[in-house]
Image 1 (spheres, rainbow, N blue to C red):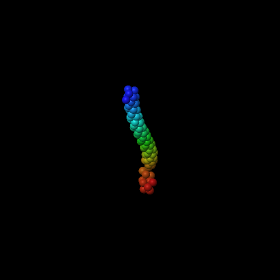
Image 2 (image 1 turned 90 degrees about the horizontal axis):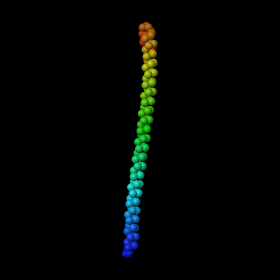
Image 3 (image 1 turned 180 degrees about the vertical axis):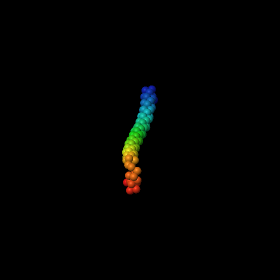
Image 4 (image 1 turned 120 degrees about the horizontal axis):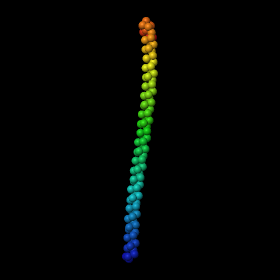
Length: 101
């Protein structure tokens, strides 16, 4: 083999090595990209779950406030009824108790 042929073969081998290295880097980059896409999807799902959890907590708080308001209204009604009862005379209270009023 001539010197030129040997040099050409060495350059071809080097070029093939560089091509394999580049291909290997491309495969790693694709793998890294797939990994990052999966991480992004998981992060989005976690964010959605957190939003859903927050919305459920807010709904629970609203429901609790509604129940509290209803309980306060009922307590006010009972208090007014007790005040009316106490405002009646003894005989009126006894008559109401007897007749279940």
